Length: 83
Image: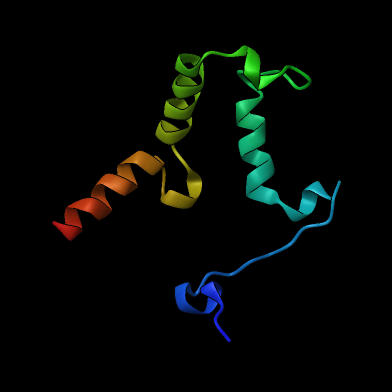
């Protein structure tokens, strides 16, 4: 039987609704986004430019799990290894 997760070796984890403790990093990122977009405020009210600015901030935010590096820095390092 063909399953994409077998080929890609991707782990899938399903969380229960309203169980935020099951989604640790996801909830942390949501908290970061809430710095810019308050809860209850529709994202559709924000321009693409504003959303991209938030995205850039998230990608440049230093992360403990990445030894203080940002996701953008780690991506650049990994891409250099491929070239």
